Image (cartoon, rainbow, N blue to C red):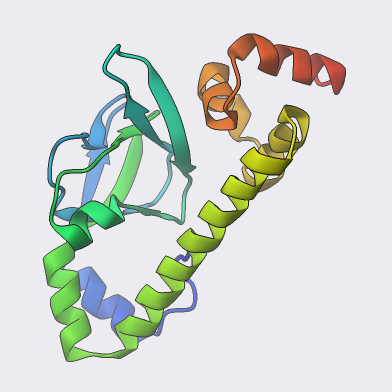
Length: 184
């Protein structure tokens, strides 16, 4: 996903003028499903989990945010509707937080933001397409190895049932995959 790395300094300065640093504790939510989010976050140092909650109370991990990535329920903000999923801090985490509407006002004043937004949406689309391809064409072991490649060291920081859920398999199946790959 797009980060702030290649963004011109003057745009970063404008963004800093509208943001504040927020701290979330373990299991605190940045976004809760069913609420209409106003804020975008930029993950400074922790891990977030994006997840859906079914009517029977089981959850399915949609994705993770690691340091240097945005934390956002994008379609909920753009469509001005409640989020379909929740975003939970998996440990202590600091974020830069700013109102999406204020960011859009910056973009109205400086069209260079639109290139950034395009790159952000482009990266999310590519990630979604690759994840869909993986679910349709790859086995669990391949999906697990891709997870390890895309999120190095993350499985040591999150619960394995979150990893299994992200991969679309049971925790027991993940244990078998890890054993078959001689990783346990």
